Length: 142
Image (tube, rainbow, N blue to C red; front, side, top):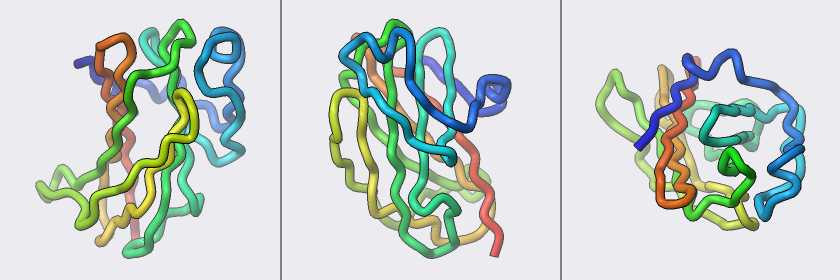
């Protein structure tokens, strides 16, 4: 499994998402997630997500929409998502449900960050049998 942390990919974060180039020409998801999207590109994966609502609130349900492609634009075999509080050693109280929206395009619903503090969202994307984990910290304040 490969790991991509937000700190290592910070220089690659770009707010607006428009998959172009290889991703647009391949059977991977096309489109745009809008101005609130976070995009992470690395040698292995093109990855973007946005939350709905755009600002996550303590104790309130939210969704995450994801677009992911292999570096050559191929659609992933699988996308999974979870979140937890590493400093507290626990995850969410609810398991998110996943909706497949198309090749390389998924939405995760029923997420709730039930307390303030530092959360870590983690996305596991499998392309060609190889799993890559993308992590993104989120800090919630009351």
